[in-house]
Amino acid sequence: MDNAKERVNRVWDLIRQVMDPELPFLSVDDMGMIRGVRLEQDQIIVTLTPTYSGCPATDVISSDVRSALHSVEPTGRVELALSPPWTTDWISDGARRLMTEHGIAPPEGPSADRAFLTGQGKSIPCPRCKSTHTTMVSAFGSTACKAHFTCDACLEPFEHFKCI
Amino acid sequence: MTAEQHFQVALRLGDDAMILGQRLAEWCGHGPVLEEDIAMSNIALDLLGQARGYYSRAGALEGLGRDEDQLAFFRTDQEYRNHLLVERPNGHFGDTMVRQFLFDAFSLERTQFLANQTVDEDMAAVAAKAVKEVRYHFSHSSQWMLRLGDGTEESHRKVQQSLDDLWPYAGEFFVADDIDEAASLAGLLPDLSHVAHAWHARVSEVLIQATLQKPTTTWSQRGGKHGIHSEHLGFLLAEMQVLPRTYPDAAW
Image (spheres, rainbow over the protein chains, first blue to last red):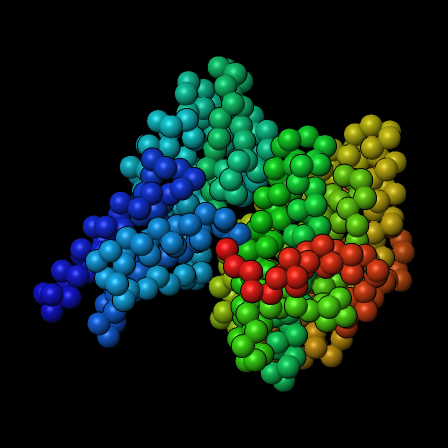
């Protein structure tokens, strides 16, 4: 039993170090993409959840997680789980701080905030100068998960991690 | 509902997403402004991801071992089951946005039902993810309806023309056939008359704000769901399928 726990923990330690290829300062675990690690019939199974249906990084992430897993568990496998769907609520607080430090405004509040979708409601603070005088340029940014904003106070463009 | 009908339902969902995604991807590098180029490519990617999910489900239901790639790349136009609207050529940006708006309003209703009410748990999982994306798509296309409709005299004239041209294609969404009726009875898909009602309300609200006239045409194009397509689909598939058909064993 202890042995099983050890094996699972060892895998956790390794896959916690796998970074998101689109946000290389964040691990995929910080992003809330690792649903779980379990031992089933002597095989370790890591469950991953994709962020967006068509996110091109999903394949790279699965392959990076698989490599990390195989370094200690050659028979292990990675499973993709769609349900329950990933939400930005699963992004850790530490990851939100790191995003801000890297000039990306983190997702705010509960993911169900639809006011944001129509550009009304609360404003997204600029990650550089903290001003709330910001404008959404486009709901679709450099990756599926980000929107493109500009700060009307310091005039810097910045990205916002969309709430879903 | 028969197993074949269940398979057809999944296939139709996948085909709508696949074909519209491919059409939008044609804008990549040709958008009127950089932000829109990126937006259309992003939406195309979301749709591609949704298509993969529905195709996987279709392949499992069919039980013949066909995977998502085989369903996407090794079927002819007559085997595709998408609505005719999504295969319409891109035209100008206004045409593309009207097509997107009419589809998004429909897709939102259908996907919400699938995410919350359908009896098929696998499709519900795909839809639960998709519904969050479709909300963004609908918001995006609605905002363009406002900007173009309530914009300049020229943009208003052009987008009204796009709306008049594409409207009869949207009518196909609500023409239920035996598969739709069986699927609705089984709790797999929503009742199309309910979807039509919600769609009209949603679309009208935006059109009024956009100062656009809702077309009064009541006849509709039809055939896509039964494999009777316009010539445009053949050209689209030729481009999309050329590589896997030329090199069937090609792999990344």
